[in-house]
Image (cartoon, rainbow, N blue to C red; front, side):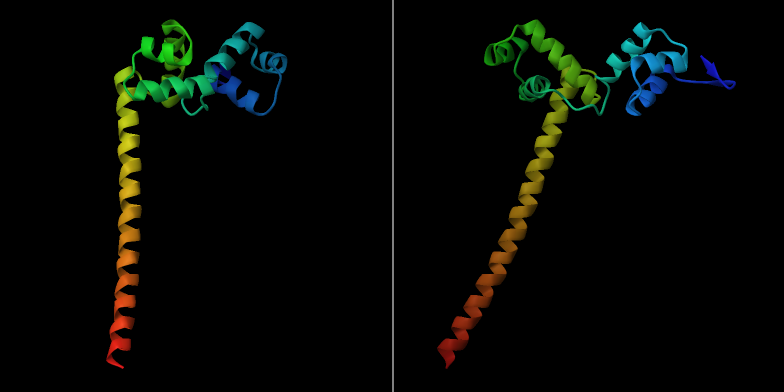
Length: 146
């Protein structure tokens, strides 16, 4: 599709107009697309990277990140393994990963980063406590001398 002699990415155009609050009908008319095409592009943008995950997608991706199988996740969440795989697929697309292995690696990195952050916080707290202890010991020594 061209507009003013320039090639336009239909998906990006539909997404941009939808973000401006235009109806499907207005988008279709503006871009010269059918309503079905507009709906298809909008549906694709719902599982694009950066789109927030649903509660089920988050649950499935968390459990997948822990290394659980589709069968185990399905039993835990009360859904079929196929439904688990659908939620995992959508979550992976939203997270921008292409495989279950990448999903697990992503969660392991996040887990490591979180632990590193907690370690840094604890080191800071220990340093503050050591400083306070040194101040208290100094006060006790000063009082003992008088």
